[in-house]
Image 1 (cartoon, rainbow, N blue to C red):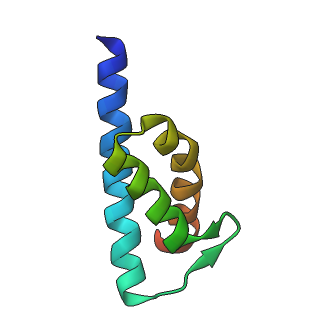
Image 2 (cartoon, rainbow, N blue to C red):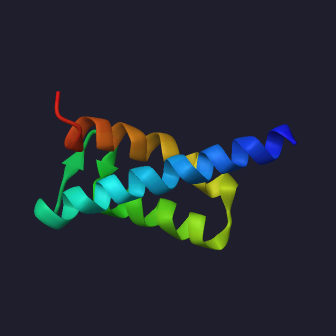
Length: 75
């Protein structure tokens, strides 16, 4: 039961970060930060999410979160 709840939280967080990253990329393409290229990390997380590969989502979620914080979220 607890694992299912954590999986839902990971999926929801990934979906929110993907949405935020893609919105930023629509207005400012080519965003690069310390964690890499926002578009490529976003695509990797979205692909893993689409395949249901939560291990893959978890591996890239931290990088996506850091990039969104660094490049998208206003300070």
